[in-house]
Image (cartoon, rainbow, N blue to C red; front, side, top):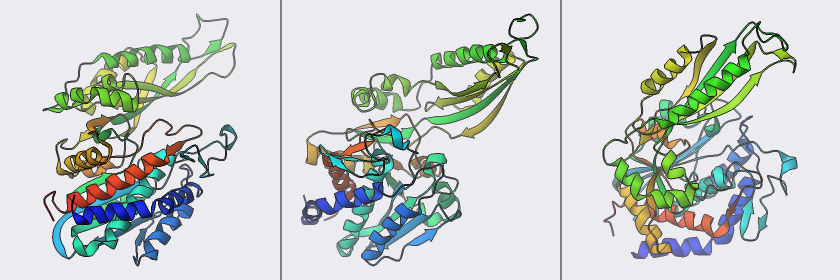
Length: 417
């Protein structure tokens, strides 16, 4: 370990209480999306940056959804790394929690609050890593950029997607995110969501006269059953990804739950919403189904839609409309950033995290679509989006250390002093 790495570890150790306090403050600043007003939490990030002399750029195509950009250049040229996190969170139903979802309370070694996992824990970690590296910038190489965005929970039209389309200075040469992954997992890719709205219309009738009309809800049920069969498709991953995924199966099961490794390579379908019928004794004339498909790496949108079209052709009462799609995406699982994270986790914790494909989506896809390697290393996902969401303090501090040291290693090219 170099003297600078040891100095970084010493700084991180000395500031642990302050790091925990920063995360607590973020959790106490509600930023649910919808509705998506992140200004209170964004101001905490801005204050932390301004406190050490930054004049961060705020880009807000919608006033209530600010995006924050900060960067610094080291004295010597080198690589350009981007640290990206999002400020918005899932909504939270106050009455369902044991304590306020915006309490930031510490209990039994865990910090509680909406966003603790997804992703204010990761956002706090990336912010702290950026600030610690800035303090020692005179001994670094390259450029480090930081983006804290709004609107990730709704696919980012006013957040990271807006920045990537309109502000190329945030592209960089590599992106590191702190989304939930699990300390034993490095996410190098993710499945692609395809969302469809299926509308079924029939004549409808009195419930006692089934000979008069088909039931729109019964047709929806048959379509749901047929959509489920698409999970039987055999989708071979491209290149060497099958071997990488298979080698990581045990870690994936521990991180994401039993069965996760199988679903990484399969189409999955979720009947997210179903609306139909007016009254118990009426045959429904209309039913609307919102379908969430997740495409594994190796399956194209056109291939899946071709299979869906075959199903829809058997149900002429139904029409389908696509309202969201993101391509499955991945980066090199043997990239320098992956090697840096592996080396640092091994040194700090004594185990080596495994590269894996994520089941859910993140903003990192936007970098990958432009050919820029992007990786996720973050906290356990077990309470993500649930009531009483929380993060272990030890795990949070571990993530801060790994982000800081891995960013340093990447910037110095893994071979610097």
